[in-house]
Image (cartoon, rainbow, N blue to C red; front, side, top):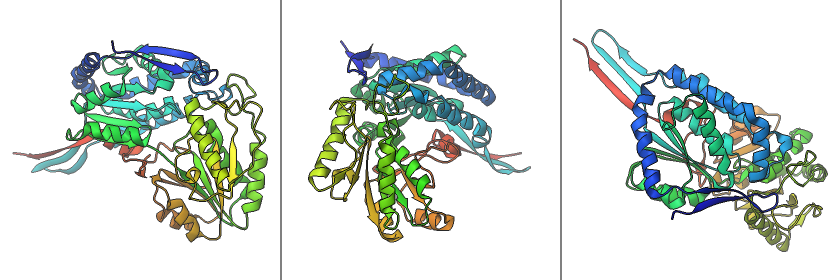
Amino acid sequence: MTGTVQCFSPIDGSVYLERPLASSNEAKAAAARAKAAQKAWAARPLAERIALVQAAVAEVGKTTDRMAVELAHQMGRPVRYGGEFGGFNERASHMADIAQSALAPIVVEDSPAFLRKIEHEAHGVVLVVAPWNYPYMTAINTVAPALIAGNTVLLKHAAQTLQVGERMAEAFHAVGVPEDVFQNLFLSHDTAAELISGRHVNFVNFTGSVRGGQAMERAAAGTFTPVSTELGGKDPGYVRADADLEAAVDTLIDGALFNSGQCCCGIERIYVHESLYDAFVEKAVTLVNTYKLGNPLEAETTLGPMAHVRFAQEVRAQIAEAVDAGAVAHIETMEADDGGAYLTPQILTNVSHDMRVMRDESFGPVVGIMRVSNDDEAIALMNDSPFGLTASIWTADTDTANAIGAQLETGTVFMNRCDYLDPALCWTGCKDTGRGAGLSALGFHALTRPKSYHLKKG
């Protein structure tokens, strides 16, 4: 027996979904089918692959109300936010729009004597291991460009969002993408590792925890299979003295607490110039006290439960440790806080980097705010982290933001915004956040390998 995988709904802790796990042999057979189908898929005209992916995305868009309700049941996001189709469509559409240019050969010489060029050739079978926090958007980041580039795809979704892979497969197959070209699989960690270590796949894209990324790299060790990872984050925001205070508060606090803080590029620590610090904290506390924690199926709810009780327990532990060490918690326990998955959002001051809440990834609705006196102090604190995904700078001076950004150890630098993935720019990170290139033209380059042609004519 290979067992099953269950999704426990954070709404009430009940089993929402249960699916049988593929056995080792079943998983290897699926990978073999994907490999057998890949050459024919890659031989189809690029325009045809693009059109099929666009049609599949449109098919997903026909069921956005269902998407919102199913996501509320699986990972707790309130239905008022309408699911994820906006970002899902934006990312896939951009990659479709740039595919012709991004995948065009690089022609070095085309003369009577020589044709010298570099082609972008598909890796083969791409294994996408997707997370639960933004399950449609994170999956499509790789699924769309991988298929467009001529790869076949095996999608393994997180246990918390089992239904997402099924819905995506239904949509892709409904519009004519062959079943062996895009397959949704339910895999144990061990079976996924077997696929990698046994060279049954040719490229791995993993979004998840640092520990999970390390397991992927260990599985691939010695196989020379490329592994792209987007792992933890502890993303900082810095509010300079010349910042628009109202905009900074509204955007950074939303960036910290939206989706119950369960965002890889969410804001987890904020540094505010001393001249604005008191006003920033006061406005932030006022804003958070307007939030409505509750059942995500109810229209008035603005903050749902965390996806699982164990995630909430970690955030509670970080908050309690910080308060015991002298931090000040500004938000009173909300009525819906049940001590389980439903967790009061929290703003902490009098924090320091000696506290786990300012060092470890929280991935929940808590943010620490510290006072700084100048740019140098802010830069040192922003870089004082094992992670490096995004950083947000709030200022009226673009040149200064650019200069500060050049000193930050991060994958993306934002000015006067945060918590956003621009599909025209490369999504990447450094340090324990992992390595790789997602979206943009570089995303296509990552999902293909360069193949050089040196053809002497005559």
